Amino acid sequence: MRSELSIAEAVSGLAGAFSGRLLQPKDTGYDEARRVHNGMVDKRPALIAQCGGTADVAEAVNLARNLGLEVAVRGGGHNVAGRATVEGGVMIDLARTKGIYVDASRRTVRAQGGVTWAELNRETQVHGLAVTGGVVSTTGIAGLTLGGGIGWLMGKYGLALDNLQSVELVTAEGQVLRASAAENQDLFWAVRGGGGNFGVVSSFEYRLFPVGPTVSGGLIAYPFECAREMLRFYRDFTVSIPDEHTVAATLVHAPDGSGTKLAAMVACHSGALAEGEAAIKPLKEFGSPVIDAVGPMPYCQLNSMLDDGYPKGALNYWKSSFLAQLSDDAIDTMIENFARCPTPMGQLLLEHFHGAATRVGPTDTAFPHRAEGYNFLVASQTINPAISDRCTAWVRQTYAAMEPFIAPGRYVNYLDDDEAGDSVPAAYGQNYRRLQEIKTKYDPNNLFHMNQNILPSR
Image (cartoon, rainbow, N blue to C red; front, side, top):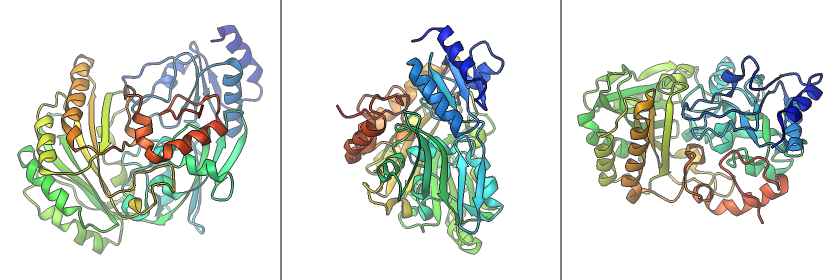
């Protein structure tokens, strides 16, 4: 670790060229800039480089490397493990880079690394276009895409990473590279699922598809006493749904803060409205819902409807894995454990993989999880620090109870910070060795290790 004087001197040397802001701990705005979405994470970088563009990113990478400081990269800051910040190192903050350019005739969009899904959707929906994005619109495009990209359109159009056309990336040596199917193909393969291990992605180019602006979907919820019947219905219903229809199921608490437990489904049908109406009809006819907010709505509204359930600053702790099967015993275990959830912000979530997301080969991109089935997430949130330990214990106990039903694969974007050392290899399976080789080529000294880290080959 270099002295504060060395950092101050380096900052002074950049002052004339850096178009963004360089914040040290005593500077105005530092405390706000250092905070990430998960309130359990409280780190103090020695320097926050709020970049204005790619040239600033390259300067920040060079500064950190020359000073021997650890590097963290922040896009939207939603990563539950808090890897977007670092104690005593350099946070390369892309939050100010908000450029978005839609080419409606080519059906593509290029966006900088600080863009959120709400911002991207707003610009693409002007043209009646969209790409698979996160289910929470305040999430940044960068981290979600680089690790996978689960979203409402994945059944029809694949994951977010499946729709990347190219990226612009700053390497550990401060070089700016373009990676695509035609340039630096090995790097392009790796960034589609390999996270931020290979450099700082300063911009993303996606292909777009005709979506909306009105789609069919929303949330429908039932009393917790109906959870068993609803989850069995969900399992049977999702066996044969069309690609255009993506449905998640959740055990969750009422949005009014009362703590009332509910069983719910959340749906999006991205096809023609008449087809969507027919597709959601079985959901609306099942049981006796206490909330029925399913129907035609703007895609931007649907993509933001869960935002209030994930407030910035809440104390988050998650565990997740793919399920080998959604059996009756697995359903009963979910219900039994959710009944003991200590926080009115806790939930169990099932995300259904099907359609286009499962028609990509497991080695075609770095993201290997291409089998049809369900990703299972145990998520606790609270704004009450006094119960945070209880919430964490509940997540661990619930995940342990579900282990008999869990498959080997892990979704890297949901890995928390205390996962066992083999969790990253488990997230990549057969692709891990190739990722290590590419890591060795582009970042042999592991400058970019504040992430779900892929170790260079030794």
